[in-house]
Image 1 (cartoon, rainbow, N blue to C red):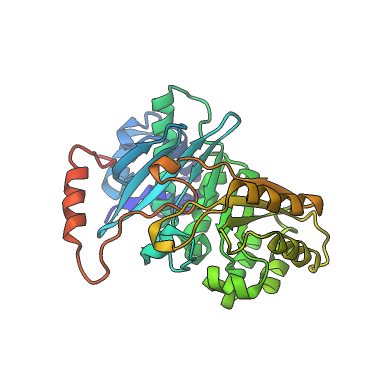
Image 2 (tube, rainbow, N blue to C red):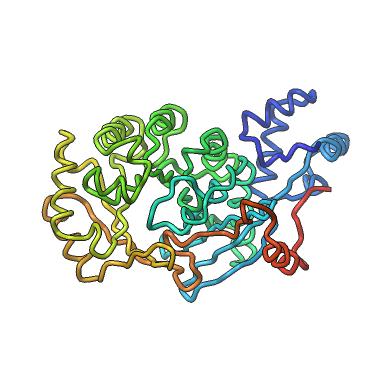
Length: 378
């Protein structure tokens, strides 16, 4: 079976080369060709000797994810649906702004956490993505956008692990993917510009602080355990006080001096000014002041299965004012890509029926794949 070289961070690729009698600098050359130049076949790697290219052809491949569909929003947002096999698909979203380009990346096909307000959670969990499947989303997007925009400079400046799935429940595949994103021989992203979003998997947050501390965003969504138990079921295992103590400990290793708390605004559920005052008390109770966190208030993007509605804009503003007056940095997220279901909480790639093959999905895949090449070496 051919090794897909998108699976390896630089250390892993160096070990793979060493097993085949190749020196470390060959791994660095390969790494640059793959990630910086976007090579999809070994013949393009002109500074590698022909015998080495032949060896690579026989033992390895560069296989990306087939693109099933692409949707473009009127605001410039682009959403791609990638096939990951067995009827599963995952979505990635590119969000362009004046001062940055952000790629939202998926880590799982589906999600097991089951947050009430998240479309991905309502579809259920299928499987974890492999490292190469996480990296392939960035690999494709970077080089597609360079061609599409006609630019050679950096197009994607930020990566957020906020797509489908709970990243920290796929830890073994996530960390090598993060290291590839950060490596100067690959994408060279700053730790401050790579963000892992989690619903609060406390043991893995502790490990991430040691293994690969990047920026951290925590899906909070409630000021007390009773409400959060209902909205974010994982809270029953890792309640708020335990979660927040872990957040404060993470700051010792984090590239930023704050943790971002994501807070989805749900009409009549968690959006009253009394909830905002309770949040202030919750943060103050940790004994570290009020400056160690930042709140990102997210307008809810409704979908039928949730049974929930979004908070009116005026109420969001009043909620934010309570936090701001207390001295907590607070922003209201600008909704992007909602016309193509690419906004926060809307990602829900097609997944086959768990009881058997979904014939409708099979037919859809047959149509979508017509004329769509699979990127592969050789």
